[in-house]
Image (cartoon, rainbow, N blue to C red; front, side, top):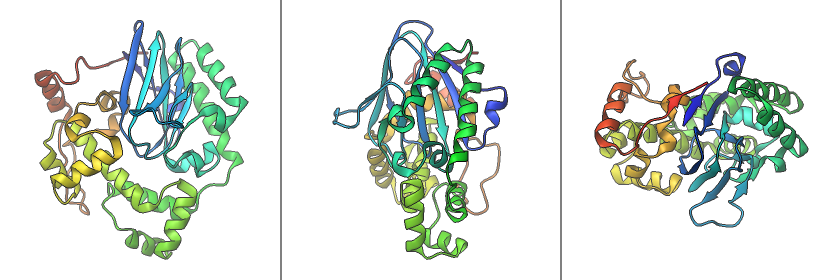
Length: 310
């Protein structure tokens, strides 16, 4: 599989990350999707549609074609077959609220992009498929994303501040403290945050903390050390959180191909030892790219890693 990332203006859109995944030949892909603190857009660009479903195939959690995957999707898989690939776009929740037109599509549902954008979704798909290169596709997506927010009211500054602080503290922050920072009561903050971003702030903090833990597990660190570094009560607490967010065990999450591509497509999401722990959190920065590469080569759980393509 080739992985392409924007090199032009598309990489500069605030709150937006994009990556393209291309099959080098006919292939069947069926991967567990690992929850991430962003809303995900998936555009199928190959011979067949992408299908997103849960492991039980529950009605209402299975969508074909280009899809929107909200926050906290739970136990989901993405499947596709044929030659081609997909464009994956991650939207920070404040951006997603503007681009998608509200929180209804942020709260954990998987919906067809056509249900959100109507006929415009089909036109966007046609333009993306007609583009001659990944950079052209990124430019098409960037043009679309940059003009849509103008039609929607931005989220409250207090809500945006709460989200940024939650990310900055990797989920280890109390809602009461955040409410004090913005000058609101806890109930009022929770109500406004939920109304505008689709999930309450406490749940958002759990998601952000889980994401940090998942990437440490993927970097090859033991579950016990990850639990301690991320502020879980113990290893059992980490296990319960991982199971709730993904339906998987920590061992399975550590070997998930969905996370294996992050240090190529979104390198900023993977932990490093390049800086000291933040003064507020005092948690260690675990793992390096070199140690991850070594652990993959020794363990072989992930198979051959993806390579970057244009």
